[in-house]
Image (cartoon, rainbow, N blue to C red; front, side, top):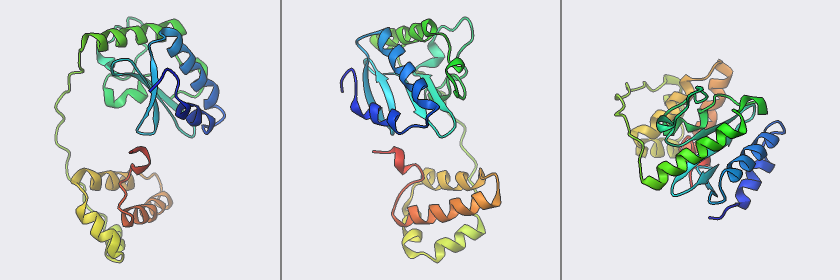
Length: 203
């Protein structure tokens, strides 16, 4: 892991055109904040580290996310931060579609310095216990598809409850029947190969 990582170059290169200049700008600002910052890739996304995660950026098709680790501990007198949990770090500033959606450079640099100091001190984010999620029912039409594909059925039965839920939530979140149908077909293929819903982002 070095100050610059070629894998981050690759992520930027294959990102949507609107995202490239924003990602390049974020990268430049973070490194201007400190030469001690190093780059890496985690879960398929560029991370900036200093004795632990500092911040990360996540490009999508129509927007990108950028956020800070330990966001709940950062001093933010002007209220730029919109997210507080580490898991939601990609949404610290909401949907970013243009450079002006980002806070000023000096604000970002100050956030970088704050997280670096927290990491230096060994402070860890306090995890709030989450309420147990209600069990999602298996859609009848997907259950029928599974039973018609022995490999998928066998793999699905071996999945942990959380892996099963990821697929069921994906179906439930579909905005249209066509999208739901497409997701079920894709899921059947992935499950038959033993893949989880988010396999692309896992090492």
